[in-house]
Length: 131
Image 1 (tube, rainbow, N blue to C red):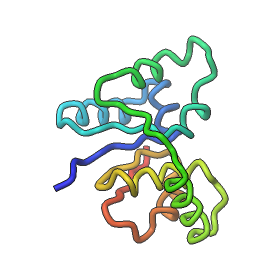
Image 2 (image 1 turned 45 degrees about the vertical axis):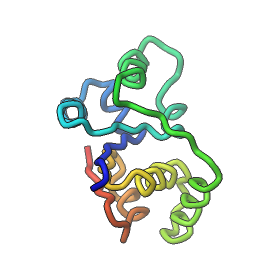
Image 3 (image 1 turned 90 degrees about the vertical axis):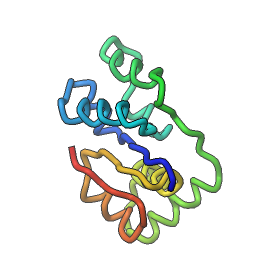
């Protein structure tokens, strides 16, 4: 059985930076259960601005069990196919869901559940959770 992962989109990281208890709870449980936490690279420039307010996100990104996976051509093509299938235009959201496909089984924590669910429709092992 594959190891489960937790993926954070930009909205989840912004919520974490604002000390949202729901995101913190998911991260605590993930750490306790040995769940890999993934932050797709596209999320980093959406959330970090080089200011002191970035401290919580920077701490998370440096934490054990948290990774910012690489994006290659294959993942980018998966994201493109997800956009075509869904009729949406948000390349960042599509990359988040493409990462979920690669890391399945996984849960995506998102502040945009409607679009993320639309992108993830019919994908096995991908759960979308609104925060």
